[in-house]
Length: 636
Image 1: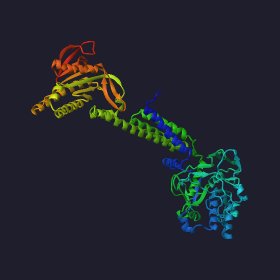
Image 2: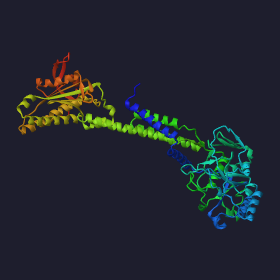
Image 3: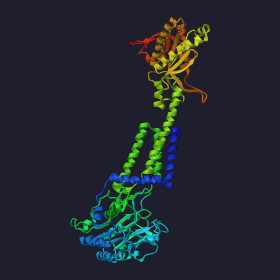
């Protein structure tokens, strides 16, 4: 099967687009990666907030607490009071997103240490540094710390699988005297994407051959009463906490299912906690996350919902994800197959469809895919790739459309150039609107052909100066051409003083015989006007004869390609039309039509039968008629 050039080119264009996008995908082109991440943010906003469970609350270091308790950081004695109050209120897990890396006064540190020890439910943070050769003077160390080991993952499986948990070079722990009495330690590192937005939680950080969990995961484990040995790090892509399996990527990261914008979780100022100005039971059996929300402390993060969310609220979403079990999952990478599918669909169909149908197809695919991707996110918790497949649709459509535009523009120029001297502007515009109607190859079809010739032109040209002959001939031919175009005829050619025109091509015209007859009558009418003018000017009065025949003819572009081409008709029926014109001299009339033309217009025209004649090229006699007018209409 040989496809037409434009259809075959459509597939070539599709393959070029598909291969280009596939190469960009293979290269992990950052621009597209950022756009893909932004589509996740858009889906969060479209979905809107999700009400979190009641288990997680936040005790905030906010502006009011700073005003009431003094400039931050606060002394350890204050934090000891906070731990005592939360323990008294019945908090089940107390999680600090506040760092205690340096000692204060012995008395203040003793109060805080005693509060931690008596509470038995405090989670304290550590911070890892992933840069080689960090500054040890800030408290970071690259040594293995024995007191960290009880907080590391105790159970691991599928350790032979490829696993890319970020390796830390150094660690900054909470002071040993506090860490020793904490229920567990956990990291508070955050790793934004390249656009600065925080979308992932590192469920595993590798340090000195051990792996450590974040505070959100450890808080959820303690709340669920899962012992450390029942929290398993699976290198093949998950973390199991009791019966809950958390999906991770190959880097041990969990995609955070953010609950909403700022203040989605219940927040209570620490000053109100210490002043006992909170509702009863606010912290009873809760996970209490302690962190800063005051702008001046600069613990603000960019998230899909907000450009300045407090980091503690991110931890709260992680905890709630684990407790609810409604995790987000990144779908399998099907970008390249979808790129080829979408571009080839467009490459095959767009060249075969009209402009409106092409737009409709593109919008249907684009909207359908967008709805499908959002449905997977909102209903199934699946982050399905959008940018590369959508880019395949966009660039696939625009490239096909651009090619079609320039091709059709060139075709329109070719059609205008080819036909503007043959047919009326109305016909040219119709051919440009629907180029398929301009079949430029040869075709056999029923056509009506008209020949007109000036009688005695040779004598006229011999008796007058060439300038006079050309001027009058141009005036006559210009007037006849206008009449042909008025009836949407195709002007084939001028042969000296003769005019040849036809109807039924390049556009199909069911009434081609009628148009030819009306045109002939109008030509005679126009000639009579010119004759009066020439007579008044004392010039030679031209007279003409017209012959019309209808029948099957071959029509198309004929000539030497690239040299000289004419859109014309050939065949015996064309020759018959020319013979009929010459018979007007014998019958001394103006218009002769054949029986074949008459059979198609007999209900419309007035004629006088002239009899049968045998013309050269025809074995059977042909009945001919003198066309004198149109029934019940004035001659146009």
